Image 1 (cartoon, each protein chain N blue to C red):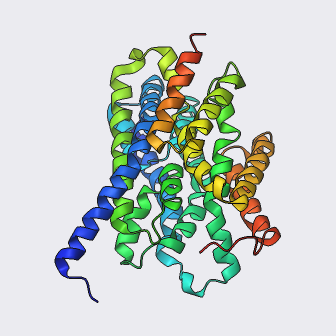
Image 2 (image 1 turned 90 degrees about the vertical axis):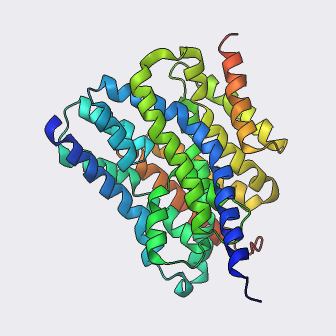
Length: 241
Length: 101
């Protein structure tokens, strides 16, 4: 039966709301990270416009931090852009994985919500119980996370080191706690999930000791090796639907 | 380089956006081999492992202990099926308490 237009609109707004709800923990987790970014950007000599601009245009935490340290070290434009590219090329994997579960929707919509793919929004979307992921869900999720990121970059820039150091330090756990919260429920149900996460974690610990593989490459390599080899070793171990 | 910084930022934005967008827009997954589909389904869990370790150990430059305690708190809260926001808040709270010990 074809859904009536009204029903369809309700469903769409439902996805949108679910996305916003799912994005709230990310928005909270981003606060301290964006705040610290703003604070460091000021210290590195960026203007408020440039600080907000970077969060607004790039929207990628780790590479923004690295860019600050490179700007402070007077690195060249090409070096900065290349490093950013290397750091963020891992989004290829996420985008491809998301495509597997994305609802068939117009390309412009996919091109639009693709902008909001981060480690965090991807992890939440990819572990969500939804069978197919819709554009409304991803936009709700992405835009709430993005708003927090941009807003708190500005707040951090303007308020500087106003927050007590002990609280700032403890808030550094926020995003990791979220990753753990996404992983544990899936790991309780599946040995394959445990094998995937554990092997990638161990590999990345090794790679992080090799300076050339720091940051982006280490995550790409460990994720790829683990996702490929577990697929071959544990083939048919369980049928994921 | 400050005059051109905004152009560098735009360049950073472009090279960040392209990998985010290409597979979603260009892939035709109906033609993908089932092996590859399986691998792509594995990616989220593998990437979560790689994102957590070793990063979580370095949240405090003084000691690994902070990361371990924060991660343990998050793990217990998640094991008890608390929702994600509560897991995040409880791990912040536990760590905040720990800094005063």
